[in-house]
Structure formats: structure tokens, C-alpha cells
Amino acid sequence: MHREKQAPVPSLLDLFRVLSSFSPARQDLSKGPWEQYVDWAISQGLAPLAAYNLEYRLGGAGAPAWARDRMLSIYQGSLNDNVLKLVNFKRAIDGLEGRNVVLLGAATFAESLYPHVGFRPVLDIRVLVPPMDVEPFARFLSQVELMPVEAPPDLAPAEQVLSDGRTLVFVHGRLTGDRAVDRAAIDRSLPNPVYGPSARKLALEDAVLAHVLLIARASFEVPMLEWIDLRELLLGAPSTGAFAGPPDSATLTARAKEWKLNRPFYAALSVVERLFPELEKVVAPLKPELSWPVRELIDRLLVSPVSQVGRTEGLTLEETVRHALAGA
Image 1 (spheres, one colour):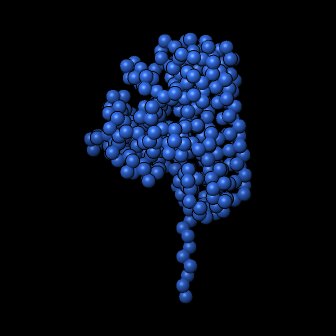
Image 2 (tube, rainbow, N blue to C red):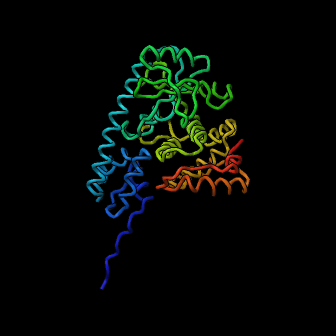
């Protein structure tokens, strides 16, 4: 007698990879660790995309009804919240002309990287402006009830932080710490007309490095959603066509050195490669050349724990890792 070969039981990593894909293949996920996945996915900002995949691309995939219902409610709430925040911000800056307001992070990723604005929760809005424009821009925003507030201690610093009671807006006048480098990034930025005539977005290579820079400043303690952001940036946002194609390898590697990001860039590339093995050929030519001891230290003490799917404990970087990440 021949026994039917049973399909392997999906692991937590399997659920993560399938449900964070923009084109998931249909499969049976009924035996996956749903109790563990749902709470973790919600905490990592993954629930909206996972809910959409389950409901509209995978036919439920055998997921329990309670899991689908819970994540679908998160998706609907995230969609409404994103639209409210982004429309209000557009209204706030739509009348501003002749300035360069470069959107960073979630506010631009939600519409430029993701097929639907509801897939990527927007917790806050970050912008980069020339240093001399920080105070005038903050005053301009105060006219639409965005008033200065104290920045939460666990979020990356900015020269000005404003809020209307619902949305935090971080106004950065510095990005890399090198004024010439920052100025060049602003000069290379691209129109982002969905937010108005003064709105811009970073060129793709700069967007990759700015994302890595903010991850590094957060000591790599970021929601798993941000690694999906990096995945799509490295692929050139194929799902939306927001960029002309993938980043130019030579430009990106040269600019990583100019930004003094070689070691954090290596670490970030290694994390995204472990999470999404299909990016191996994309990542390989981009990895900076580091000495074996530095690579080993970063891989073992940073990349391994950061890329552990399901991790709930906070990451504490040892001083040796901080030292390894310092400099280019």
C-alpha cells in the first residue's frame, strides 16, 4: 500500500514569508501556528497585508476564522487610519509652493512600495527639509493645528516634532550629519505630487540608505514590517512602478561608503537576505567588503537575533556590536 505523502506543517517562518508576499502562492496553512502568529503579526505591523492575502489572494488558506476576523479588523482600521493621516497631511502642505519637503519612511512607502495604501500602517510622518527651513516649516504647519510637542524618547530624534493630537510629524533638518551629503540627497529627490507641489521623495538609492540609517539609529530594534520596506526598495518597487527599476549597484555601494554606512548596510542586507532568501542574488553584489572578524561579529550578535521570526524580547546590542557597526 502507498501512503499519501502529507504536506509539511507550516512553521511560523512559513506563515511570515507567505503572508508578507505581494504575490503569495495558494497553499494550505491550516496547521500553522496561528495562536503565535496573530499576536506577533499585529505587534509587528504585518496584520493588514496578511489579512488581505488571506481573504483575497489565498481563499482563506485554511486559517481559523477567529484569526482571519481579527486581522481583517486590523486591516480595515489601518486603512481608515492611513487615509485620515495622509489626507490631512496632504491638505496641510498642498498649498506650499517653491520648497523642498522630502517625505521619509512610512508616509512615502505606503503609496510608493505597497500595492495598496492600507497594507502598510503609517504610525507617524517624517520629512526632511533644508536646515534653514525647519523653523519656517514648523510655523507653517502650526497654521493647520500641528503644534510642537515633546518627542517620544524611543523614536529617532528630529529638530521639530509636531502633532494634531492624532498624528506625529517629525521634521528633520539633518539626515546623515554631513550637510553636503544631505543637500545632495535633497537635490536628487524626485517629485511626489500626490502630496502637493513642494512634496518630494528620495531617489531610490538614497531611500534605501536613509531607511538603513534610521534602522541603525533605532539599534535595529524595528518592527518586522520595516524589513518588508527594505525588500521592496531593493527590488525597485516592482508592484507599483514608482521607480524606474532596481537601485543601481555601483551607485548604491559608493553612496553607502559616502554616507559612512558600510557596516550597518552590511547588517541590514544580511537580515533581509535571511528573511527573504529569494533576494540572495539582489543582495550579493551590494554587500560591502568587511573583514571576517567584523562580519562574524555582526552576523552572530546582530543579524541572527534580528532575523528571528516571532521574537518578542527586546534586542540589546552589546558594546562590541555597537563598536563593530561604527564607521564605514
